Amino acid sequence: MKHKIKIIYSKYYYDEIIKSMVMIAEKNLKKNNFEYDLVGVPGSFEIPYEVIRSIKEDSVDNKIKISSFKNKEKKEIRDNIVQMAKLSQLNINNQCIYSGFLVLGCVIKGKTINHEAISTSIFTNLQKISIENLMPIGNGIFNANSLKEAEEKYSKCTLQAIGVINNFLK
Image 1 (spheres, rainbow, N blue to C red):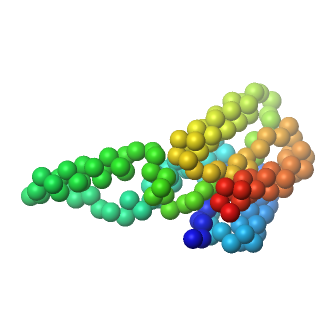
Image 2 (image 1 turned 45 degrees about the horizontal axis):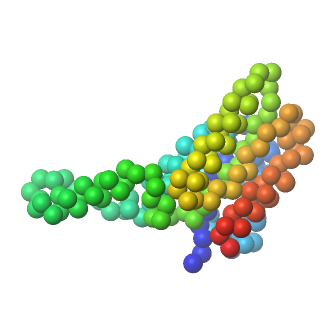
Image 3 (image 1 turned 180 degrees about the vertical axis):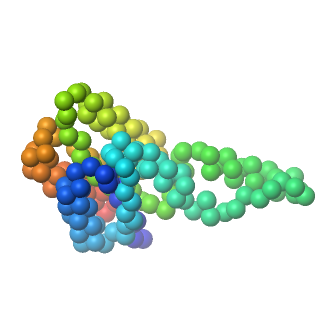
């Protein structure tokens, strides 16, 4: 079975760095025979939301239509209720169309401690989503103290995140 990965990247910040990270990711995923989809979100803070949205909504179960209860037999109504309950749960990873996620972003320190709060939230939520849904997430989101430092770090961070995907899915 060929694994399908969803690459989620921050699209409005540090454009050149992110474009380079995406190019590295695409090249390596193709080389390792992964299929992938690519989606950008406004910033790194929005990445965990897109991961969990994809786990919940980009699933085989969502292809099944849930119909009205009008003029239905009890068994059909019960089956529909069970189906709705399945769709409302976070942990449907066995039916998610993706085998894993690769997330790419950069958080650079500013004049406040805002970057620390953002990074902590992102990393905590990604880990929670991964554990609760048994879903590998290659985390290529990194912190830097300056744009220069980010330019020095992005390649290594991207390759390490791809390594996580390879480790769990090859």
